[in-house]
Length: 359
Image (cartoon, rainbow, N blue to C red; front, side, top):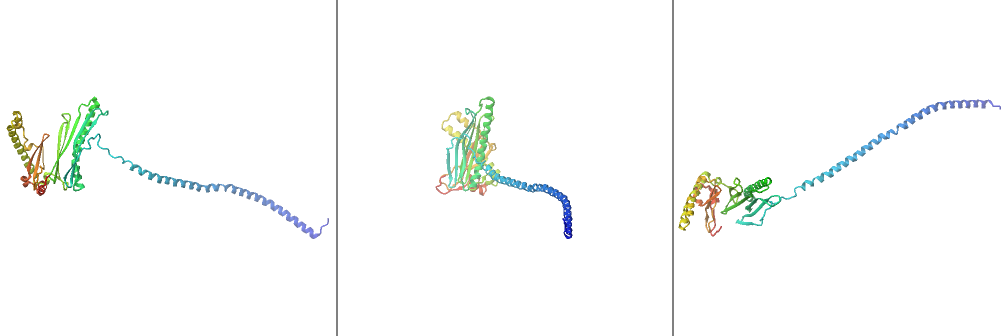
């Protein structure tokens, strides 16, 4: 086939371009393979990056745990609060086996001053309740109304202190008897503790003579006394020092007056016994009875005396002396001791009464 010159030239140029293109394609194919390999490695490493991005997701999971724990703590805290409040709910029980609670006597001493006296009795027993160990009985005095609460409470604190002392003796004797029972199986001694409160008043002063007696073994048996006087208006505890400028002189005078009164009364009693034809043995006992000397009294007290009826001035007082568990007393006119009393002493010991007043 005959090809013209121009067409031949065009054909040669086309063939050269084709060869050049194929050569170029061979070179690019190698580079393309290498590039694809690098791109493949890039795609392999890219999945590791999402794992790093998932790490914050774990942090997000820990944050809710912190929130939940804090919530639990806040819910636990309020629940712990009511638990202590329920603890003190049980109220204290009364004295065990106390009987005769109904025996209350309420006494109105003045329009604003009332005392209550309780007669009581209780006992403690062995575990099987078949054997008594100790008994506690007597009376108890409490001021239930006064000019104000502080006066009432201050008096009751002192008076109740003696009662608690007697109750403590009762508990101690109970323990002693129970210990004997545990060792021997027998209650060798049944102890008895008797407490007593006696009071007198002139409308301004309340005087309380307190005692408890222990009945048991010879070593334990004894009688204990105490005495207290109170200003019913102020609750003040009255002593020789509060009513006298010379307390020692007042006490010495009262001791001597009590001794003289007891000796005088013994003479009168002796004469009365003879006049009424009492037996010789009784008369001799009275005459030979030993009267304590003034210095022999273990304790000496002064208290309001018997109230005078329909009197303008009530100035009688009672002087108490205690010796070897025995109470001695005499009634005196407090005016005879006026020089030893200060102004306050005269105001509480000598009470001005209206006419036709019957205490």
